[in-house]
Length: 443
Image (cartoon, rainbow, N blue to C red; front, side, top):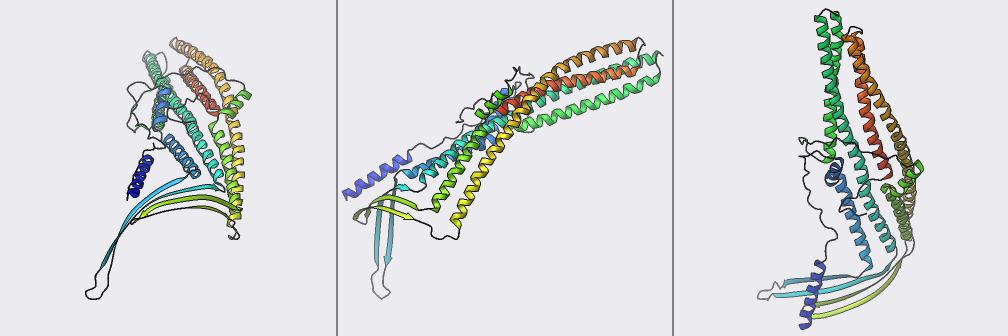
């Protein structure tokens, strides 16, 4: 009886140790509400999107599952200890008159230790799980990369839309001023009443442009709000600043950076390796499968103590399975080839992204200089046309044409500046640079 009590104490101690092991992962910190009372910078918006966007949560959950799978696969290399206890109460009796019924109670407590010393394909499965876990970490980084570009584009689109709206509202005010100017000259009898018609068209067009600009603001706000994970009615403001960018390196250097830093490229390299390991595992299944193991049991069964142990060594070979094993090898080989082709396609796509962003960045820089010169020239032309019309040396069409040219020049300058910012963001995304890590994400 003493031996049973001691064994039970050992069993309780082992269960306590196992239950006290820390969990494989900890739950993420609760989300904090962003402070929307101050204008949000681009960095503020990125912090919000990394915290709240579902794609980040999905990528992190995938990494947690992949790490857990590594732990599960690696555990097959170590002994497994299990404990069991049960009580069975039974009753038996005869149907004869006066016969007595018999009751019995059986109690069983057992401690079992099993250890698989060797198993064909086990190391391959563990290596494949580790590759998948590393790939899932790169998936988090790639999610950040794509969200960074999407957020940056949406951020600058909204800023550009708001600047467009300011220009459009100023164009409405200018058109109203021109209307007053023409009306005064008509009332003075200096110009014919027909001069009012082009100005009325200018006023109507300016008001329509203002309405379109306000609509563009609402559309851009909805896109940015969705990326930030904010409710539809949430209002916020942005810090209207444009970053200063240095001239990018040469194209060859950018290509090298992309090869070194793109997380999706590293992830696909790991996918190729995982597919190769899956092929090896399928080939192992098609050959002789060896297994060696040991086990030991100690138990107490209704007052009787027993213990046993055994060593085992075995081999298995599929003589006939209607082609299932061969089909598995064929499918795994095709998957390995597809993984390699996906890697080749991704490398070509990255090359395209880097080249396009590089050339668009240079184009945007040149467009800014041209747009500034065009705006200054349009401002001078409008001032000259207004002065000439006031003195009766020009017709009203010259004024409206000059006003339209200035509006186009101002919009072109806004477009060029934000195109440049988005082009640099595309170049950063294509080369996976200037994308900070997030606390809690493992690389």
